[in-house]
Image (tube, rainbow, N blue to C red; front, side, top):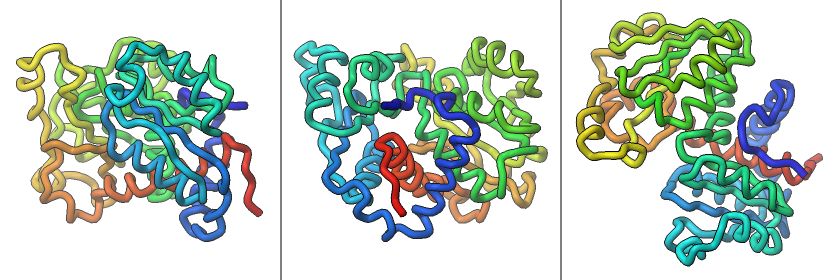
Amino acid sequence: MRHLMSPMDFSVSELEDLMDLAYDIEMNPSKYAHACEGKKLATCFYEPSTRTRLSFEAAMLNLGGNVLGFQSADSSSAAKGESVSDTIRVISSYADICAMRHPKEGAPLVASSRSLIPVINAGDGGHQHPTQTLTDLYTIRALRGSIKELTIGLCGDLKFGRTVHSLINALVRYPNIKFVLISPDELKVPSYIREDVLEKNNIPYVEVERLEDAMPELDILYMTRVQRERFFNEEDYLRMKDFYILDKAKMEIAKKDMMVLHPLPRVNEISVEVDDDPRAMYFKQAQNGVYVRMALILTLLEVSVC
């Protein structure tokens, strides 16, 4: 039995196999329509989610399986004080696989140590978001042909953004990747990412504050929102929330083939006028999440389709 807590749980070769499977699913959906008949996915979401929870549910339903679960801690026995360990031990007797989101870092890892079924980390605090990273990698590969020799700008909340942390961890294993880290001082990437991931692996990176300064050299711009739920006080959030806004004027100084990604939800960090730009790929990115999660469910359940 295997779990997914981090993108690092899969080798680069395994990631390529997973993305190949996701591509085949995208191209031949009917081939997989009954692959998980009789199987059940439990979605245990202790904090709000739209895309991640619904894409997991859509993935399992597209595979012919069923879904059960809860969408907030208040609607589960966590409200009565039940531990994650006890919850997953019970759910192990109800379902075949579990996707868990939790505000506390490491909670899905604790669950996996007590679970009798595969557990997928669907986001834990500001730590990791591996299925979003798999989606990001798949989107990059699908649109660029490969994942190599890219200058990638990460913009916005690099301190609390778990999608950013997961993506950096995954991308450092690919050849000739350079990062441009775009954030104010208060939201810079944590030192453990900078030192233990980037510098330890000799990955070139620069830190800048102005988005305009970075735009002309980027192959990919990965925008993130400033997350109100990660701030300890409202004043700091209000001061930082409008620091970066991608608009049509900024897009005009970017490369003609630059790709804009965003894990969503968007607040106002990308102007709606950018949505019609052919380089805006964030809604396609969200769609890709279903194919990737279908491939992941099949892989962890060891279901093969001929």
